[in-house]
Amino acid sequence: MSNESGQMPDVAMVLAAGLGVRMRPITSDRPKPMVEVAGRTMIDRALDRIVAAGIPRAVVNVHYLADMLVEHLKTRNDLDITISDETEALLETGGGIAKALPLLGDAPFLVVNSDTIWIDAWEDTLRRMAGRWNDADMDALLLMQPTIQAVGYDGRGDYQVGPDGRMTRRPESEVAPYVFTGVQMLHPRLFTDCPQGPFSMNLLYDKAEQAGRLFGLRHQGDWLHIGSAAGLAEAEAFLKGG
Image (cartoon, rainbow, N blue to C red; front, side):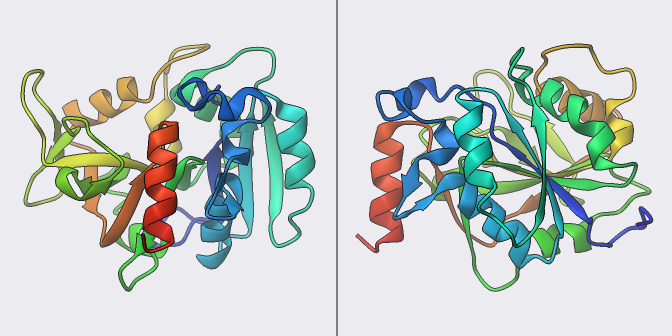
């Protein structure tokens, strides 16, 4: 596929290599993406969204209890799944995506955190992101949720979003109106000269922000943050209408 603005990527990456430490003891015998929320695993919920958007291919990175996750992924026959193996070393968000770049191609691609659950108001979010993408201006487009509307989230937010969609990071002691949802569209050029080994995507977001190439898109709908057992319970109650 060409990397023209507004085109739907033909591949999405699901970040599924985390240790799930804050979810223990639930994650003592399974990787966090295999935890069920209202009867469906988080990894399947993420892949369901990729399939629904018409994306034929997914790359999934694995680390903790990787064999269990890999076996589970073999049960999916509705899209082509490639494993990016991080069992030797956990690479964090940035390092994990950088390692997978050869599998992702040279055009913009979508990335979804496996512990992110979102509900669309009317339009498919991944299609909306692809439609908003502007190759001339952007290296990264992050889906943002209003901080006060984020279910299960009690942090200070991450970014301010300007009228043109360009984002600036929250100053240290302040509260920001938007929190990053874990859904994003990235261009491979963002990773030019990136560090080797483990690093956080925050490094590259800051680089894109300084260049005026970091953009945010406000999510239309609900977003559930599942970072702990309490967050899991809150998400289940929300999905079940409790």
